[in-house]
Image (cartoon, rainbow, N blue to C red; front, top):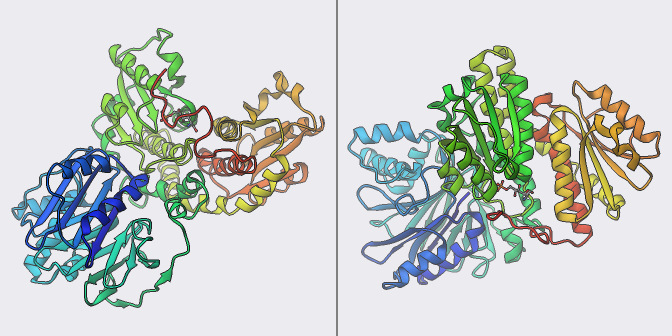
Length: 615
Ligand code: AGP
């Protein structure tokens, strides 16, 4: 998830673009750059680091002058964060310059063809390929920029929001959108483009939000022409008057980043499996895994090291890997693993899971494992983070920046990657049938829609939250794949509402915790379709017979638990192995609403940091 900004009008572009990038830094902040047309040439400056680093780099010389400019703040998906991989990117001729938010899945095949035609590439990015594809179309088809963009994008597979201009035609910029957001601000004799309205809301409240597969040619004098990418047909755009303030725009209209990120989960799960899950072909393609697949297939065991929510994702992985791929797994708190002198051999694969890629305990666990000869594989959300550089290989989640301290979309995208790895191994080992393998791939592909359905219970969950917001203690119970989800649900509630909550395997109740049950103790039970369903029903009966209060997460249409529970929250039917991706959603929302009702600082809860980089 990157931030893109563009300006064409009568004012100096640089100050507008730079300030716009600062407004968009919440979208990505590992590198930044601007390109300003100064009337003769393109003044391009870019750097690894934050927008302020870019500003300092530019301030060392004359700030670029000109009334046409674009800027980008990056959240890397292809190519580590460095100056070369930062945007904007030139075409080979230096005439075109582009910024891009998204992922071009087929860039390698396009790049191969362009190299054959003599194009030279300086970065590792898919974006540099795109701008040269556009240039190639201009040359071969003898068309202008707008038409070339339309032709080029019909050859591209993936997601994008792009802004591109040609220094030979400095009275226009061309934008296009598929899967990533792009807003056009309509001023008086000036136009703005950006990932959201925050860079231009102070200049104009009139905006066009391009729809998927739409593009626009924006000219100083002639204004905005919107077209369909597929067939170049004209679109009559809807110009809306924005009512949101700056802060609301940054949060996408949500009250908190955490809620925005809960709702981003369908899209970021799609981004995470995009180009990696080819369900119809029965293919799972994970770049970081392909060269090391034998390490996993021949491993004596997989040791998962992580902390907090990432540790819960590791617990889910234990069920998935053992159940489907029949590979022994143990899950370790990194903070314990690093000090208990564990037995590790070269035959072990250590899997480190970390959203930030900077967690000190997880990093220490990795270093210990490597010192004992283990192969270490990382699952991180931040490209170029310390953990991602310390591991032997890895797979990035594409959750985008997670601003809320309470981890939500990181958790479900971690599980998505772990499921892809487990299914790939299970298929190669033949531990699941081809039929089951294909069914899992097809079901994984529709998980985003399942989550969309689960999110529809939000208002109902808010009502449930009202009832229990003053409870002093909660229990969360689950079995099998949903035992880790119970732990995660309890952690969410604890860390943002400050209410004590414990997660347990449902069967553990009779070994002590059932002594806690009374009318004051709400018990959240994950009671969706599973091999353990009947046993969970018995656990609910045990609790009810002791006057406990049950909030049950059930599969849509459930009548048995519905007749027993005090409150139910429905989620769509999902195969047991994939249920954590869906059952987590209501628990995130329940914690969120209770915390809001208690006036907690939801995005920055007390005592917590987003990344625990110290012991
Ligand atoms: C979860 O909501 C917390 N923010 C915390 O437990 C977090 O998951 C943990 O600190 C691990 O962070 P990491 O994934 O960045 O390594």
